[in-house]
Amino acid sequence: MSPRYGIALTLSLLTACTAGGIPTSSGGGGGTTIQVNLTLSQPSKTPYGQSGGYTPPITTVAVGTQIRFVNTDSFPHTATLIPNATQFPAGSPFGVSATMQHGTSLSGGFSSGAMQAGASSQTITADRPGTYLFGCFFHYGAPMRAAIVAQ
Image 1 (cartoon, rainbow, N blue to C red):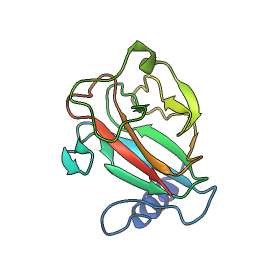
Image 2: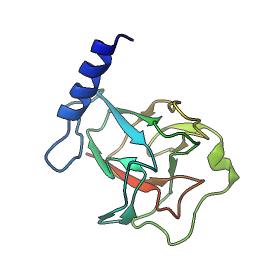
Image 3: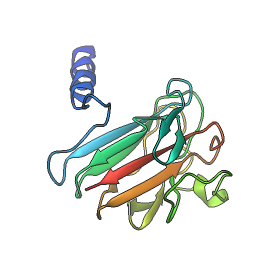
């Protein structure tokens, strides 16, 4: 990728954010990238509890949107659904299966598996409206967790 293309892509992603820092997709089938970086994404309060490690802490997308997680950090992370959660649990809700990639839809459950530095997840489809909480197997208590709102 040329440096000029990389800058244009970065600017395009940045301008897709609303004033609240929540990227949105205007129609079904669009794509959204969630940055995974514990070092750069500081904890913040959300309606679901403390969030951190993912940018943005709450991502709002249209049903049909394709979502991908990208690890821009220097160590492994996961992005793993917390099933049926309306608040972030106090302790880690994950078993070792969170380190293995599975699932391709929000409602069906998903985990990016252990994404190494610079890696990205499989494509995950926002297939049904709802709020989907997720977190990192390795750093849940950091607090490395966030939410996707599909509408």
